[in-house]
Image (cartoon, rainbow, N blue to C red; front, side):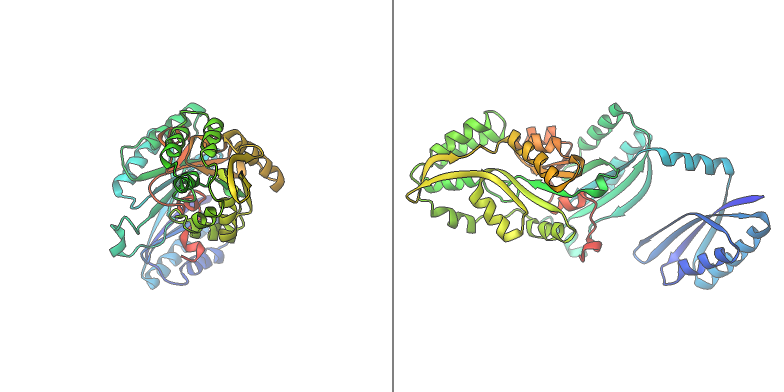
Length: 406
């Protein structure tokens, strides 16, 4: 008669533990049905579920017990009933989701509140892992330096209505300084290939048109139109035309000076370095200006840049633009085009932006992220980052610091 036995081993981590215990199981031709290991601060937890028969089970447990004593670790045996095992196997057909907790510091209260939501919807936690690196104690409470990310893998059956309700509960947790991402863990989530970014206020901590307006002496007028457009109060195309017209007569040479002085948003350099290392294609899809997009492309290695071209005559801006305006709908069309060029599904694309004109591409992409966004944008995006810099995008992709040399 067969027997299913679960072994749980706890103790100080040391080399050779898995080899020692799996060798004993191999000696008696036991079949490993499942195995998992986690390490927290040099403490090991190893679980092995194996199948054997009654004639061998006693010898296996005896040898495992002696080996555990020899290695100085604790071991516990739990028999598993056949029907319990069959029910466990049946659950693997349920959908898996990834919940990401991101902030300067993820607290016990944060984890407790998220766990309560998971329990409320009948979901089961399969795995919890830390994506951020180990933080020195002196940096943990320094909100200018610290960052923390916990990824929780959950499994369960959710209707479309339940999924929406669960996601809303997570996004509306009453904890300031915490971003929570909820994604279906499917083949597309694990094979993202293209990331498209807005530029102004997303990649750089500035609105380039406002910088130009200051040089032209029309800063207040242009800024007021910009803010109204970003809030979605006026049409982007109209606002863009009005703002560009106010730049008439400005010397085009000031663009170089502005480009060199652009303040980059936190984490831009590291994010781009990592994305290039792991093979992502990156694009700037901006309602701003090509000149500044090309400058960022040269500095950080973006693969594509689509933005607006200012008309220049005799070294001065004419107050007009060339070609079609890159507005919200154009950004969505460009996202589709780039997916075709790269030969990928839209579900493999990521879009990141902060303004109302970014919503079409954010809604279209497989993963759309509102980055330090206006309230209207954040309310209409399924994912958002407001707690840390652009490195947060890496964690929403499931990338782990320790895997990236940090």
